[in-house]
Image (tube, rainbow, N blue to C red; front, top):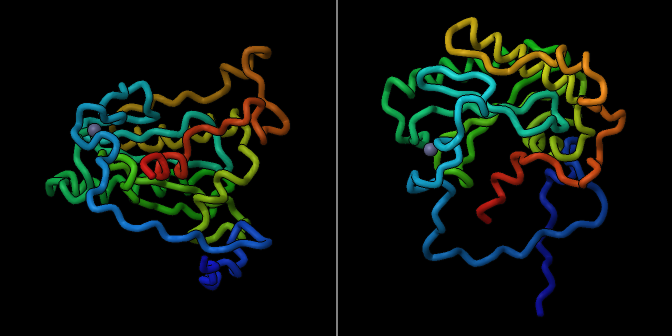
Length: 224
Ligand SMILES: [Zn+2]
């Protein structure tokens, strides 16, 4: 019956750490001998491979960019995927080189949005086997959101209005399409003209059903 006396790490005192109050470090579970397969590990049940182009905001011959199902707390969260069922370390040289170009291009596109100060690019890969790179936009002026906790803040901040989010998706998709490929995301203008079919709540957090869209935390925690 030993108390967990692991000291709280320094980062819990950083201004960017989202939580306060009494906390303690979780007990570390023993390591497993054989790790379970990730989602889509054998290629047959891969969500990315099974999603048609219409599920993406922009597509090209070898790359696709998708958004979350619904807006979240950050102004923009996007995922870049290669079409081929490959993980990062498996990319042939052509795709590896293109990944660099696509990463820079998408970072610029998201950073061009109003109110975006910085775009953080992340690849974890513990949830799904199919390569997926996360692009998370930090809102301008929100210095408290700087750094490694940005993905946590995405689930904490009030959800951005859906109309604004759709407008941003369309802008990013159009930016990418300027270099090739096809933009699928439409601006929200048309939907604004039919009130009653498209409710934008003033206060969107929490959602009525208490469920947020699938976000980084959900995906990365799905296998744990
Ligand atoms: Zn796949």
